Structures are given as structure tokens and as C-alpha cells.
Amino acid sequence: MRENPGRLPVPFARFDMLTVAASAIALLFWIVQPDGTGTGVALAVAGAMQTIRLARWAGDRTARERLLLILHIGYAFVPLGFLLGAAAAFGQVPAAAGIHAWMAGAAGVMTLAVMSRASLGHTGQPLTASAATQAIYVAIIIAAAARICAVLEPAHSLPLLYLAALAWAAAFWICGLLWPGAGRLSKACGARRPSRLTFKSFDLQSFDGGRLILLKARLMR
Image (cartoon, rainbow, N blue to C red; front, side):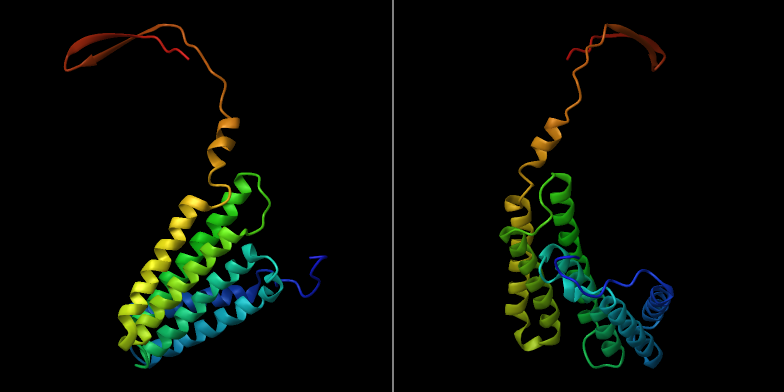
């Protein structure tokens, strides 16, 4: 904060509770009746409130650190999904557009965003996004955007679907193979390996199908 002074994120307050409540009501409308004026209005109101809520978190101050910025980008797909859902309820866009914004966008981006933060934190590495980590972020954002656009642009849906699939696979492939800290996780766990224990022999008596079985075992280190 000292290196990048400015406004602070607004703590969780009444507006956030109202936003969560409005979103839950809008989703209930959407589940019961996906199309219609009431559903469209409810989704639009929830989308607007979610947009305001995101703006209150001072995401503009996170541009210097991609590890934080990606969290705001991932959450941005939540209001986008509501707004696309509202447009779908009014018959302006296909209903799948909002669903992909929530699933490929919010869920997909946030999954890798949180995984990257947890991977670095639990392996004792600096909490900053390396070039490889940023490549993961770019790939998953491209995948989400392409999947949404494939619904909005049916004439170009096939190449956009190919792009979405390739970018999605690339994001998780880089995550599994090249993510800084992933290769050190086993070492970190190994460094905290429990001490070796040796147990004496013991006898165990049990019943199996009416037969008394006597087991002898010796646990060695």
C-alpha cells in the first residue's frame, strides 16, 4: 500500500449483503423462468450491483501485481454473467453466453488465480506472479473470452471453440508442468517428513466368518 498509495477497498458492508441477496433472488428467478421481463430486470439489477461491488474493491490499484489483478478479473465475469443473462432473458443474446461467463470465466479464472496464490504461499516463495504464472492467466482469460464469443458470434463459433479449447488446455498444462513452486512442493513436504518410528511385534485376534484368526505383524521403519 505504501508503494502504491490511493483509495482502499471498501470492507464488507450492508451493500455487499444486499448485492448477495439480490443475486440470489435473480438466480432463483432465472432457475424458475429463464425468460421474461421479471427475470431480465432481476438479473440486470444484480449485474449492476455486482459491478458496483467490484468497483468498490479498488482493483485499479492491483495492476502492478498480477497475482492480485487476476482475482479482480476473475470476479468481473460474475457481473458479466448476470448482464448477459439479463440480455438473454430479453431475447437479445443466447442464454449460454451468461452461463459460460460464470463457468469458463468466473469459475475457470478464479480457480487458477487461487491455485497460483496457494501454490506460492504454501511453498514459501515470494507472492508475485512470474512470467509463467502470467502466461497461465492470459491463456485462461483467452479461453473464457473465446468461449463466450463463440456463443455471441455463431458465424465464427467453430474457430472460437478451437481457440477456447486450446487456450484452456494450455492454461492447465502450464499449471501442471511449469508453475513456479509446483516442482518444489514435494521437497517442501519432504523437509517436514515425520520422524521414523519402529513398533514392536503385536498379536491381533479377530473373527472372520466364525473363524478365529490370529494375526502377527511387525511394523518396521
